[in-house]
Length: 158
Image (cartoon, rainbow, N blue to C red; front, side, top):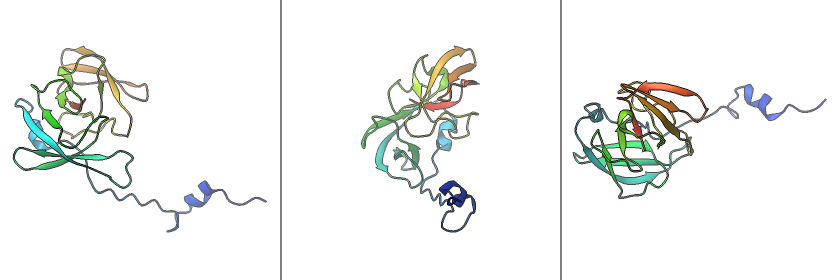
């Protein structure tokens, strides 16, 4: 008879093996981005570690003094200007609607439905690719090789 393997011990649910997922930040896009028509400018105030998450979290401060956390993308640094909205240029860290992002661009933190704050592709080091633009729909290839058709109004971070 062998000993119980680690996976079996975890399944018991004792206090020793219970998962403790205590995250500091709830990441997502602010409600101000729902208008999407005007350009909103913010700056990365700090990059912070979030327990239970593999990627650092970027705290973005807006012009009006409000802060919101997002999962940091590769190349993001403190002091970087982040532009959000339809008129934002295509550059790393900017947040735009899917309809404005050219095909072949790598994106993360994608909204599943417009206004939900970004539910798809938030794990560290992952990205999706914009495959095609079909009028008011955008086809996106996810890291799992699944292809999704999303509304072109959904926001995503480049």
